[in-house]
Every structure is written in C-alpha cells, then in structure tokens.
Figure (cartoon, rainbow, N blue to C red):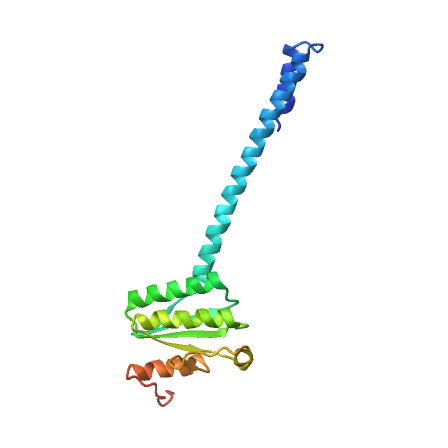
Length: 190
C-alpha cells in the first residue's frame, strides 16, 4: 500500500494531467496494488491459521500424557473438559503407548474432569473397549460423587466388565494385585 503514492506521483510526471490516460493508469495501478495487498494478507492469515492448528494439535497431545507407573501398568491422568477430538487423541495415545510398552493394565484417571455427560461416557467406554481388544484391562478411577450422580441421572451405565475405582491409589493397588505385586509399609527409618 505504501507503493501507491510514489507510483501515482511517477505516473503524474510521465502522463499529462489533462488526459484520460492518467486516470486509467492510476486506476489500474490501484487495482493491482490492492490485489497484491489482499494476496499478502491472505497468505499471512493462512500461515497463522496453520501455526495455530499445529499448536492446538501439539497441546492436545501434551494434555494427554500416558505414564508408565510400573512394568505392565500405565496411567492416563485426564484433566479438563473432554470433547470428541480430545477423547480421540486420548484413545490413540493410550493405544500407541500400550503397543510400545506391552502393558497389561491401563488406569484412566478422570479425577480432573469437571463433568461427564453421555458423550464423554461413551468415549470412555470405547477407549476401554479398544484397549480390551488389545488384551489390556482398563480401570477407570476418580469418579467423584457429583459425576456418579450425573451419570446415574443421565442413565449412563458402564459395562459390567469395566473396573472402576474411587481413587488413583485404589486403581494402582488393583493393578499391582493383577501383577502379583503388593505394596507394604516398612518401619520408618530414623
């Protein structure tokens, strides 16, 4: 846009003021520069949108870490609101980590999830079913009283073969028992 003034000044010097050709050349120059400016703005916006989309994708992946707690035991602490896109990332991340680690038990901890509706519950059930197809038992932990009440009011029921535990500690104790491990207190050292 800053080229308009010098170009129009140059055109005014080269073409006499009293000819219709000057107005025509100024108009053509203005249209070309406007199109160039619009093209530049569109390219900039397209690039910014790609960066934002990439960052959004990276944030989704970072917001769903799968942690190896012990040989054969994974934990997936879920924090924040769940939607279809995020639950898909959760499922993919969990299944990929199951393959990488060869784990037999996966704990999905939803203590940090503020609400669970029918759709979220269905996604959790699908994630558990997918893991089960890979030979992994999933335990859902952290179902708070408010979430349990909401699920009952909505008529959401988890399959009978889905293990649920009140806390991550209870789920970990269950997973350890599945592997024949037991956590015991020892005398405190002085």
